[in-house]
Image 1 (cartoon, helix red, strand yellow):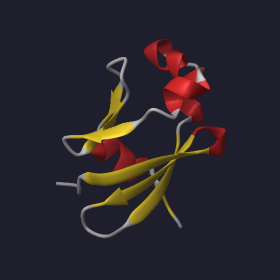
Image 2: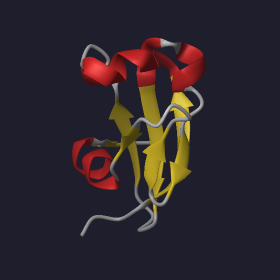
Image 3: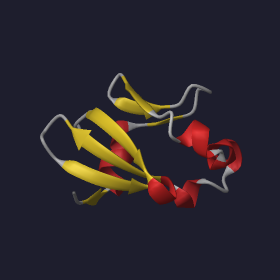
Image 4: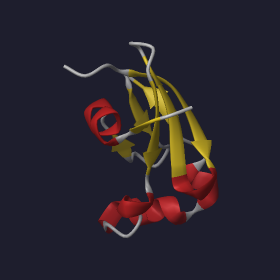
Length: 79
């Protein structure tokens, strides 16, 4: 089982800085998702920057979410 997200910070260019409960930090690039169905809504920068951690995953007020597994496995290690 992968670790839960503890904190999220939206960055420029549709990237998310993530802190995981195991102490790791990763950067997740959301741009590949932005042309896919429901994720197109996140092209709205004010919606994108409203990301928050809910139950260990990242969610937006419109109900979109990304699981901690996806964020951990596809995130790049970085500061």
